[in-house]
Length: 197
Length: 395
Image (cartoon, rainbow over all chains, first blue to last red; front, side):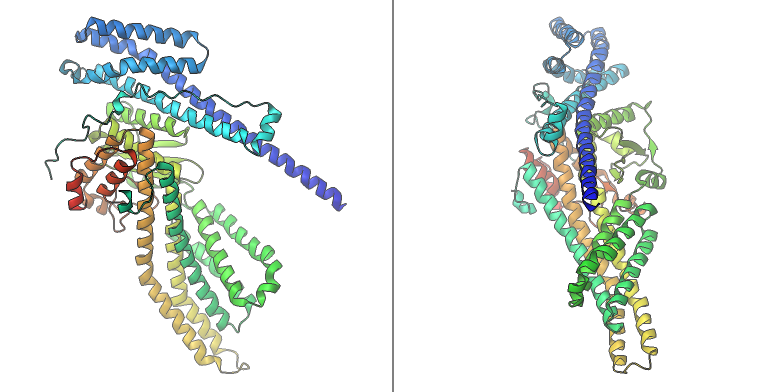
């Protein structure tokens, strides 16, 4: 009788253990998916918004034709990459090089006095900047989530259940910082003068 | 050098573990202090009640329940269900686990009492702090009239977008909400709940006066508080101080009466206890009254030190996430110059919130120059030109 009870208890604990580990694998997997979907959403958003911004800048006639063609070329490349390739890492890499080209231009735009007065331009500018930031944050989080997932399924006790379910290690995304030209520290970006003190 | 601020490492992960270790030691101090007071009460009752272990244990459990109920009235927003779980957990330990060792421990009654005191303190602090923030946001939001962000206003829309960006960056999906208070000062605060939901409150002044990167860093600072569970951590200190005050009340008013009632009765006992009991009652009274004076001093020291450590941690974690230290430094300097302390003092703001910059009676935030200094040292950023001015004025 007592032997039966012990066996039942052991079976019960094994089941509980299995459920707990399985759930935590799935939870980590979902986090990775969540980060991927956030990235895709923001990539599409940038693709939607950018033509509007370029048009409003074109209307003001500020940028040279060379710069505009450069933007539109890389934009069409970016758009085709987003539409065609199924692989997210491909899309992320294309977007990263695309942001690298347009980011310096976009960041210069608010310095033009003609554009400063345009309410619509300011909104678009901020939208695009925040979307690009969201992509960068989402990539950060994606790599964190992948790291978390990989660590979990490669270490005990996750490895047992992961082997049973056939879960594989996920590849990391290359984390390029090329587009983050705004993060430069040299150009004396502290607030100037504190006259009230 | 970071050594000037009392840290030994510049590396983020080392610094993080160092700060967590140091703040845990501070919490341990406060729990030990609560334990010692419990132990004192246990000893007084044990001696006063004819050295009957069972009776004084029973009294300790009674104190635990009284302490719980009274602290409940001091800290609002506590869910009763969690408290009952805490009480049952404690009773479970006392009823089922302790009897196993009872025979051994009964020969060392003082050790027994000490263990019980420790158990009471730890279970009390942890069960209370897990329940203390049951419904976090709505309580605070109703006090300060916080409202959801108005997405038609362009600046609030941008703030919301930045909030969304950082929510993605920290991987908190739909668990955090943004609220806005119409205050003219620059400030931001966080309330986190044990159920994983939290609320970030931004002032209108912060949205109006801070630029893109500054607001980004301020929000990242608040998100770091959520990730590091700082509200929960600091609530433990509030619980300890509330519990110590309840125990002080018990020692000063209740325990002497129990002892005197005891001494009046019992003619069959030998009368040697009379003067002895009087001294015990006097000790209880004096210590209880002293605790009323000492508690605020000691607890405010501990809270201040722990809170400062947590702020430093949130700063460096935020800067690590946004990867843009000048934004944080500029925001800090703007806050230092523009926030009016009178306003904060006039509008008293409850305890379990982590604000960007507060200066109430307990100094919960490090000096701005110290924060800037640590950020610059850990991220290899050059010091801003205003740093020396801030340092000389000790702002």
